[in-house]
Structures are given as structure tokens and as C-alpha cells.
Length: 209
Image (tube, rainbow, N blue to C red; front, side):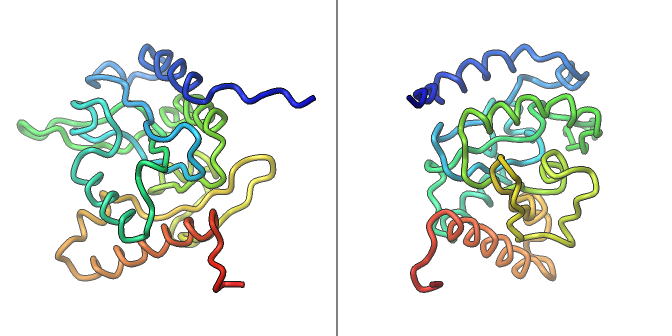
């Protein structure tokens, strides 16, 4: 007789509480709080970014700042409801450096990504998504290894035996920096196309048959 699946919402609540006290790397010392994942506990699509930004660190929720608004816009354009996804980051604390009164994003080191991987892997195990969309190089390397390059494999669905498939694409903050610049519209269109690929992977379009 098949063992019933544990309640993913309860699993995530326990993980969130555990992660709030994580001290496995030094990033917690300068962050306001741990920013854990949020969304549907049974989502078929998980979106994984790099790390919380300044707004996320202050508010305690993933993708609620300017990059989050880009993500929300792209999800709408791709026909995906954010409420139907689970959104998280590869690193749960904001890494930053001071620039006057501003706190500027600083890319996490590999050792910090490695220290935080336990939380991402446990989130994936609880939610059991069919597909993970990695937003940016840090998230992709966390799940696919340090040799992964978005420039070579962006938009491709990469199968993983016994684990959810992965598709890597741009991080919304990259698109934010490109707005109103040459190439910005094209990059955004590619991002939306990648999200549509993810959506079709979950619910195949009958016209593609």
C-alpha cells in the first residue's frame, strides 16, 4: 500500500522555521532576516532566483521589489499565475555592500551557495514540482553545477533522473538593468518565451501534437 504524501504546506512551515535560524555561512550577520520561499505548496512550477534583494530583505518575502514586478509582468505575459507557482531563491540571505546610503547587491560566493543548497533541495523535495525554472546563473549553478552557462543553454529543458527537470533563463534584475536600453525588449521577449516553454512543458499545447 502506497504511503500517503506528507502535507507539503506543513513541511514548508517547518523548513521556514528552521531556516530562520540558519548560521551555516556568514551572510546572516548583515541581513535583516532569512527570506524563505513562498507560493503554492503543490506547485508544478518552481521559480528559483539568486538571493533576496534590498526590498526582499526588508520585507521578508521573495521577489517583491523592482525585479519582482518584472517577474510578475512576464508571468502574466506568459499566461502563468504567480499564485500557481512556488517562488524562492538559491541563497536565503541578502549579500550586499554599502554604497553611500544604499545597499548594493553582491553576488554570493560558491561556498555560500553550497551552504544554502540544503534549504533549496528540501523545498524541492517538499513541493515536488514537475519543472524548476532557474532565474539567473547563480540559481542554475546551484542545481546544475558550476560549469553551467546560461549563454549556452538558456531556454533548454534539462532532464535530471529522479529529480525535477530544470530550465534556466535570465534573472529579472538583468532585464531591469536593460530596460530602455538596446537589446532590452529582445531580452524580455526571450524571457517570456522561456516561461511559455515552461508552461507548455507542464500542460502540452494540443496544437504542438
